[in-house]
Amino acid sequence: KWITRRGYVLTLVLIVIWPLLSIPAGKFSETYFSFWVLIAIIWGFGAATVITVLPLTESSEEIGAVLAGMGCGSKKETEEPIEEKIAVADVEKPVSIIETEPVVAPPVIDDDKFVPEDSDEEVDC
Image 1 (cartoon, rainbow, N blue to C red):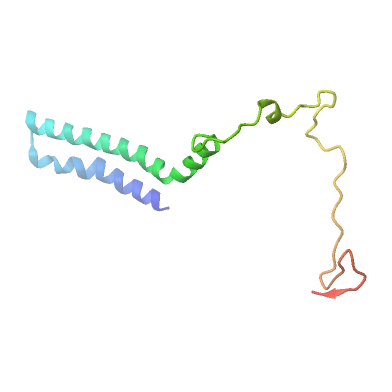
Image 2: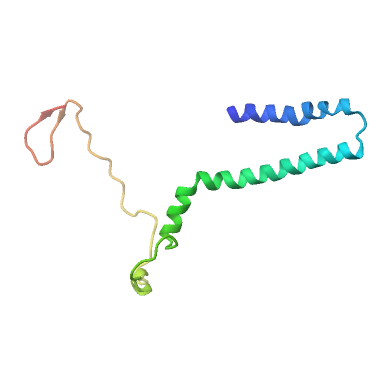
């Protein structure tokens, strides 16, 4: 909700208010036009810097954790052989993602009494 409002305000400023501010200048001289081009270039570089640096700084902990997990943060004393890291797939048995057994509904428990599985007495809840 707040981002929509800010978007509308920024659109109003850049499309209506900013051009209205240049009306008193009348016809732009070459130096005045160069000034506005310089402002636009500075704005572009500033925006590019912000949209590059802010996400990196906000995610620096996560990026550090990923790099440390990849081994970039610290070296292990001994590395495991690659053969031990790779799991051997059972080629004989096909893998199925479809369940073949029917799903059974759990038993209904009375809300007033609860009987633990390993006990014969009833407990009030």
